[in-house]
Image 1 (cartoon, one colour):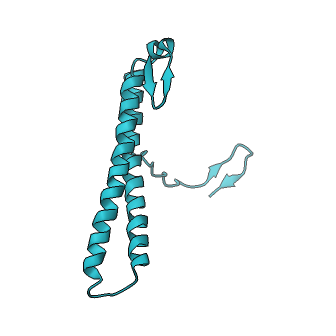
Image 2: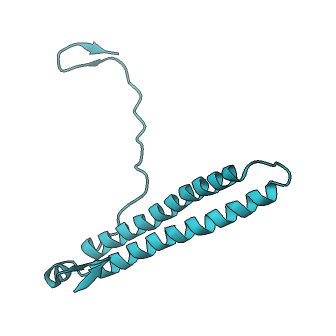
Amino acid sequence: MVNLGLSKVDDHLVAKHPGLQRYAACQSYAFMKGTGSFILGVATLFGIQKALQRKFPYPLQWNLLISIVGSSVGSYAVTRWETQKCSDLWLLLETGKVPDRSPPQVSIPEESKGPEKTKYGDIME
């Protein structure tokens, strides 16, 4: 049996997907890293704003709001990045191929050489 969070996965499913335990560990690490980045971000932004409050005084509620919102955005980005790496790991373990994450190549349309006929006999310019 393999544990995924609080639930257990049957042995026949684990045998069918041998990388399941590594994927679950990767996902757990990604979520913990996101949580850690949120906590660290709140503390850091709060400290920076406390130092700036000497020059620009504003209420504590804005200090907390900016710290929490900024850290949430950063934490989301970290978690999304790490989860994408876990998805790539899962695909590698299941298929043996690394997914191609490069942006698609944009083809440049060719210049028109002159009037052309359509399949209806009309001339296009």
